Image 1 (cartoon, helix red, strand yellow):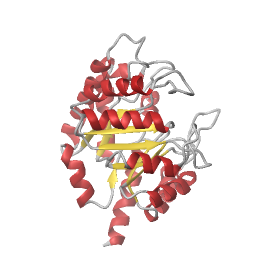
Image 2 (tube, rainbow, N blue to C red):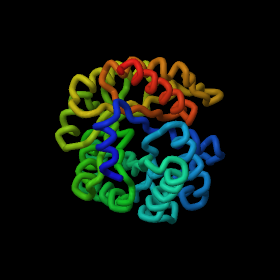
Image 3 (cartoon, rainbow, N blue to C red):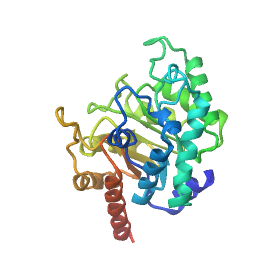
Image 4 (cartoon, rainbow, N blue to C red):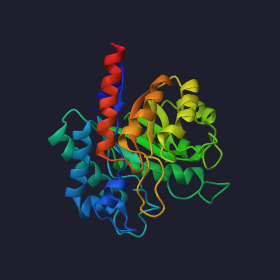
Length: 293
């Protein structure tokens, strides 16, 4: 299945990723402070259902519920990285096999949760080792996605761990603020030149901002990148009282249209999005494809 993604890139104008996992888990009653990845074992039917909903909505690639499945974050939950990563991939594959047999399952790798030296206490070697453990545990995935990264050095550790311990396609998305820099000050050009140089298959941005605010960042990525560009925007910003996000699926895809001009080829959603948003993204891309023919 790993080659299927590279085949998709050659044969399709656009590829559709999934929407938010955390938003769906919270809607299903996940409590504050609960470790989301433990649900892979305690509520597998919920994770199968969420993955199935995204495949049904049009996702070609669905992320397994493994975003925080590293040994630092799982320290106190009583489960190992291997147990939770394996269960997460099994759940997503179960949905895939039922709903969309030609769909792909991604091992989702998020930040460790601790800053690297010199800002923090984690050495590059320790970070690499933490990521390596996740990569090896996720060997049965079809692709690897490293997402929501803000530190270029940590991102580099994750990519090297993926490239040196797996033959799967690797995607990277970092999280930028409106000033076109990440929280730790990484610029768009530094990200693209460093990470593309490590041989990843696609690069882009996820989280932090709504689609309209992300457009200048996507434009900048497109200028520097000669590989496919990924966009996974938030559904705007959450209301501080209701926690509802302020961009509707209709507005979301309206704002996404401009990304097509900047060379984006891979689309999904991050915080606040759900299968309804992915359905709207799919309809917009089908329309765009027709207009290209």
